[in-house]
Image (cartoon, rainbow, N blue to C red; front, top):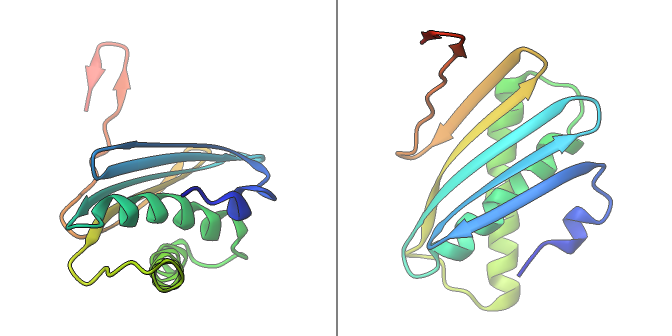
Amino acid sequence: QALPEFQADCPAEVAVRQSGQDCFSITRKIGGLTVYVVCSGHGPWGKVVSFRAAQSIPKLLLEASEAATEQLLARAVKFATTELKHFAEKNGYDLRHSGASVSILLRQGSSIHMGWLGDSRLMVATIYGGFHR
């Protein structure tokens, strides 16, 4: 189930894709902020968990007021958890044995901020001409 109520008023370009139990989203907000989220689901409802997290995390990050980026990343994960619990209760999903690891990257201009929960980590690489890092 998609999140049309999340995306209806979103002043951003949103792309969400899912493969198996894994899901990612790329959301570009007008003004230059881009949010990348990768979720790796596990358990009977891992597909649902990863899909909902990949949609709800950018929503909070794009709507959040100015705060320290570290705090925003933590709040986004808490928001996704709360949203997922409400969704599961409303639709009768038992998520006790399901979950997802989450990796988040925020990019604004030349600055990036990263966070992760679980065993899905991030790696940043720079490619410039013949130089690789």
